[in-house]
Length: 261
Image 1: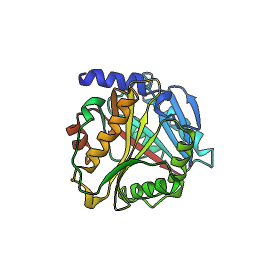
Image 2: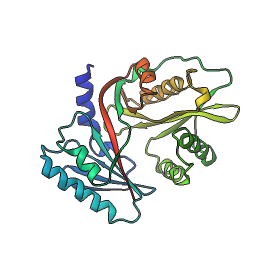
Image 3: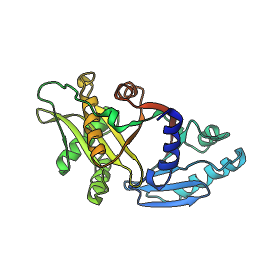
């Protein structure tokens, strides 16, 4: 599949309810999907903005901000913007309404089979899925630290709540001497060709040793076994080259804009 075909598959299959399987509530506002997740997180997404001009976009952003601000349980909201959308004035409008742009990420897509490979890892490294609460909390704490965040019990609580729903999400870790050194999620998307790979994080001293690539290959094998022929991920500039070597291609960009109470 070429880049255009992959991007079309992304827009048509993923930019719908399939994008947020763990939502606890979804409210439609024109073309927007106003999503609420466990743990007090909001999320704004859409397939497109319906040809909205700049004035209409100002009204949509203001209405979305008002919607979330009126619910005291929502502590932060991410507006997920894509680089290939027609969205006149969106950047300035989001900033004017208190949304702060984060680092842009690459939308990466590829055929699942291309990620399946045998990768050498350091002696003693074990790859496995986890479901036990203690393992999940250790995994989440490692991810928080790698991403420069404070360790958040609420993040681990939300992941455990998702596991309890049994919605297909798998949690994968790479472990050495009982310590989690790398981790990531696999999220098969119901009703589509896709599975997503998310939350990829590796402890700094263990980067560049093939561990994350091996973890990606393990998740791809699992996705392929469940019939998912395409993989997608939003990638930082650090992980993008790893995914490119594994066979994913950059089809567009996405920039999260975050509002915090």
